[in-house]
Image (cartoon, rainbow, N blue to C red; front, side, top):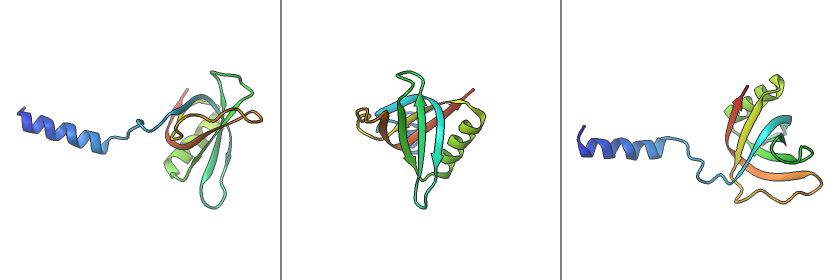
Length: 108
């Protein structure tokens, strides 16, 4: 493969592949609640890596992310959620704000 072809492929991959570089608030746990008002959904995740009484709150208007969260909730599967907030908020009443979902990964 020639150098220009390799550079073209690398440039295309950097544009087309999703990036979590702007994700700074990450948690692992189980989806405990999904609330869907008229504009965007709230996904609540009970953390499995920190104090289990803490709940992370993320938002999304992406139907694929919402479907993944609902599937994980219904089947009691573990998730990893990356939020776009610069850093997770401090704990207020057991709640941590994680921002808008960048990626959600579901695992058995």
